[in-house]
Image 1 (cartoon, rainbow, N blue to C red):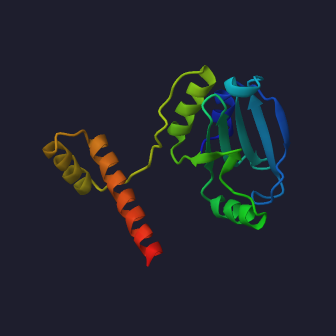
Image 2 (image 1 turned 135 degrees about the vertical axis):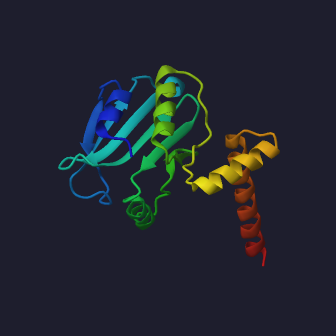
Length: 179
């Protein structure tokens, strides 16, 4: 999870709003800071952070890219289930950012940071989501050999494997729904 310091650098220390966080999932000392570029409509963006005023622990960071109708967030894994349950208890779609735009949940700090820097600079950015993977040395060597045999980079190989796994999961899920 990115730190308060990293977030402050991302927003160039520009805070435009702040308030107590209205939900209880992050505890009684949760506070939210926003950084808005001051532009209404399609060229605007906002960055937000929710943290503890006592411990400075970061619970959530999010950003809304109004130019491209995209929203990204990271929720501290220790609080993700509490957030989900509170959204459900409030009959709120927990991943809805605004109108028909849903948050894309990110898991890799650098992914959030790179997207935020590009949004702030008004630049194009990679909309794919980085996924942390953990391989043993033996697995890593085996997968690198397989990628080489297929004349692919290791990243391309892993990306294809993840796509295939998602497609298989979605197909089996659909098959179960039809039964």
